[in-house]
Image (tube, rainbow, N blue to C red):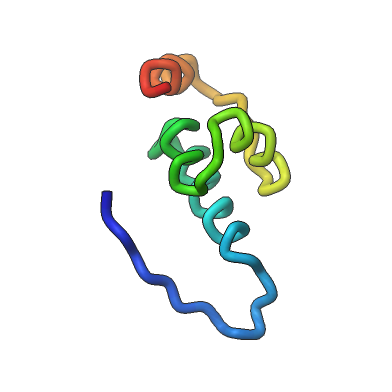
Length: 75
């Protein structure tokens, strides 16, 4: 696992948790991460991540069956 550093303006009123969720949920949506992998980035359980991603405009339901199978395999 690698670590990245992100600089954001001080006046951007978002918590670190929100940044992690935005990044992890977008990578999940693009199929780059499984729900379990994305949850680990944020420091949540897989169930908690799945329950929260809708707030960030991401659906837990994939458009493809192969994505669903991959997510199950990576659980």
